[in-house]
Image 1 (cartoon, rainbow over the protein chains, first blue to last red):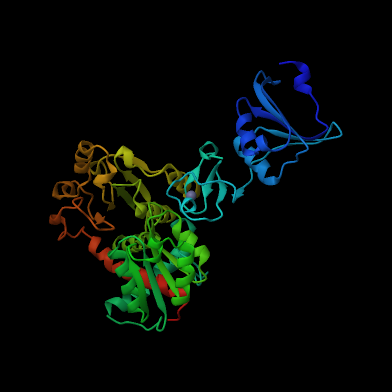
Image 2: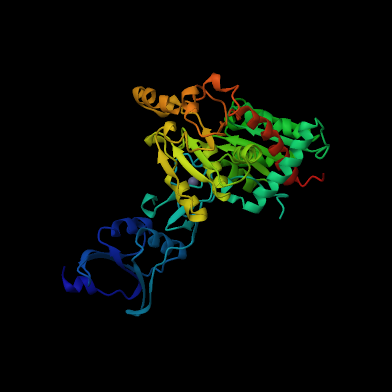
Length: 145
Length: 309
Ligand SMILES: [Zn+2]
């Protein structure tokens, strides 16, 4: 990859860095970027630890808590950089929340939340997420977004 | 500690103190039953039994318990002709029923439906079975039966049959674990207890059950043999069903190997997993279970509605 593309700066917005290689497209979909703000996608970039990573730079967009929570579920290693006036004004790692309310769909097809409109709720339980309704626990990869 | 105005949705919600109190209250109710007395504790109160899935036993047990306490019952069984078959949401149905009754006992094939109903209702909701998820009142009557017949000491309990879809065992394993019992799981590989339940009881109580595939393997170990029905429909391959079903039958041959004093429990209905020839044996406690069930449901109705003795 050309260096200038990698470092290409945005004036104001968000850089989502340290995404696992290959996960960026999923994040683009979750954040519905296709229909929204201008963004730059970099995939399979060399990261410092002999690994490849993906990154997304989005102009004039600052993530909501819901969006950050979704990213944390798909890419727990991600970092979020807030850019203002071309400089990083805030940098933080995402951390999966203890509870997801009204965001996720229950992967259990016979769960009531899939047949009747209601706010889903999942709480963290030993690294998995337990559905408040059907009581099943799911690992993060089992959720569709 | 009080269960008043609470719901009973999952065995996972119960504390040991609560179960202790339910068992204590069940003892009192049992003494009413054996003396053939009907205390008017819930006179003027109405139980709504909403059974969206056909049921005879559990529904009649709830209704009998309510009648024994002097209360009345309204309700239905089966989905046909109800508002739900006309497309009404469960939430709306509950919002209506709570205007007609003081407490709801509900069965629905959809997992988590009782939790949704409890959230929607201002009156207490009792889960009478939500799909393959939970059936807490059955587990409470099972543990009450064990207490009456064997005492609540460190017993060896084997849960046998369909442990994947069987909601009664999903509830019961929580209560057995709570009382520090040794649990063994006996099922075909394809019908094992779901991983998330095993993780949960291990995390809470340290329960780490051994797995077996034949009841023969646990016969001389178990103080309680808890048998559930394996449904033919669970097996896409009927030859496979024929092969396994033989390993899940309690008969005289199995009893000869059994530990002295072992009791056999079953949530019923049974098909052929317990031979008729066992019914008259002292170990057969599955019909007593049904009797104890009335006492337990009386206790629950009283406690959840806060009726005074
Ligand atoms: Zn669910």
